Amino acid sequence: MRIRFKKWARPELEASKFYIDEPEQNKGKWKNIFNNHNPIHIELGCGKGGFISQIACENKNINYIAIDLVDAMLGLAKRNIESNYKEHNTEIDNVYISRYDIDRILNVFDKNDKIERIYINFCNPWPRGKHHKKRLTHERQLEKYKTFLVDGGKIYFKTDDDRLFDDTVTYLNNSGFKIEKITYNLAQEHDFWNGQRNIETEHEKMFKEQGIKIKALIAKI
Image 1 (tube, rainbow, N blue to C red):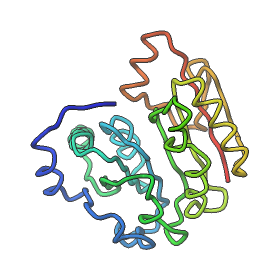
Image 2 (cartoon, rainbow, N blue to C red; image 1 turned 90 degrees about the vertical axis):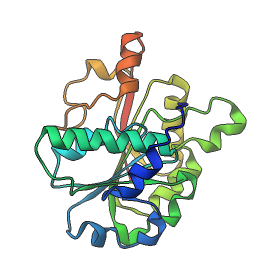
Image 3 (tube, rainbow, N blue to C red; image 1 turned 45 degrees about the vertical axis):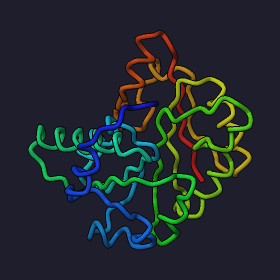
Image 4 (cartoon, helix red, strand yellow; image 1 turned 135 degrees about the vertical axis):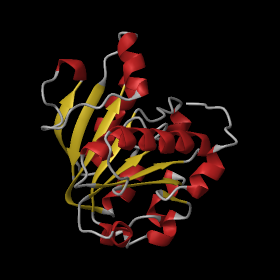
């Protein structure tokens, strides 16, 4: 998703207490950053923060890290997090956002971080064959995630793109993940996320209005 440059984004991020500019410095010691032993979940490609701002605020017993590559996106995510936490009158103490190239994710996390869950919501489908390796769910990325996910760690994935979804199922099977739940029409599912409500992102609402079915799955390593 393209977004216009926002000159305020970088200064606001640098001044934010929950933005980390060089996340690789925390590799292997993210629990120290949160200063607790709560589970750590991450969102890869957080965009404007519509998802992370809600799920983190609703689950204060879980630590969250959201990553995106674009300052403008992260600036909007920062504002959305601030707005949601303010609305619920609660402190922002369980979420960090960071700018980083997810292709180099192994510079940021390792097995000592014990990540329990990865969220990937409506990532770029990279439809052209020569670009498939750039997909966040491609096998080359899944192999990286396996190095820092705990045993039994899970990937929660949603997309509107049929081909990306079908290819992702293949990628997961080839990488040794077990698909626990799968749907080709999330709107028809009851309690698909095992007691957690379905948090609709901006993209999800738009696609649903267009009559596009949302595909989703939960995979376990």
